[in-house]
Structures are given as C-alpha cells and as structure tokens.
Image 1: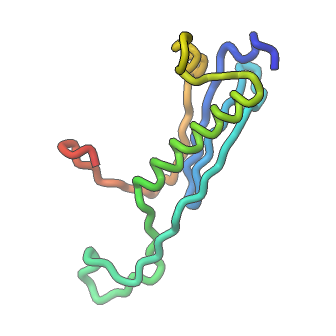
Image 2: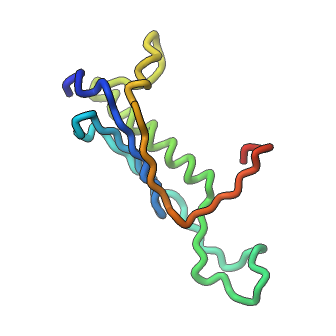
Length: 123
C-alpha cells in the first residue's frame, strides 16, 4: 500500500436485510478492507401491535440494536484488518489524527425500515 494513496480514505456502510458491511477505499478507488456481519431475522407469529384478525404471516422484523451492533462490529473489524497489514487507523497511542484519514462515509440501507427512537432515553 502506497502511504500517499492511504492519506484520504472513504468508507461505505451497506446495511442490508440480512447483514451489514463496511468497506474502506482509497482516493484512487482501491478497496483496502471489508467486513460483513449477519444479524438475526425475526419472523413473528403474533404481535401485540397487530390488532386486526389478520395473521402475522409474512411479517419480517429486526432488532434495531442488533443492526447497530453489526455495523459497529464491521467498522472495527475493517480497521483491525488494516492494522494487520500495517495501516493502523486506531486512535490509540500518541497519534490521535489517524481516524481523520477517513474523510467521508456513505450509507445505503433498507429503504422500507422504520425505527422509533426516544430522544429522552436514547433508545
């Protein structure tokens, strides 16, 4: 890896319906590292939110905290993999500017997903 090519990195979070991914590319488009983590698929047979007589067949749910954790794990694994190859992006030690090499992060996700969030509890 040319150190000048790694001076400006772009990350990408791909949060899909069954897994999350994170990858890092250089400013010239060379992929440096990637990680993928699957998360649990939930197919409820009943729900307290279903007040109609219609069954829950076909419902598909996810735990939003599991999604969050899978994205965070992907980012950590990607950075750990790069460290094994000599590019340490961790903020430990004397050089806390290394994470700033990641200049931008793009996100793609499940378009139809909605998560309610309580601003008082943060959950």
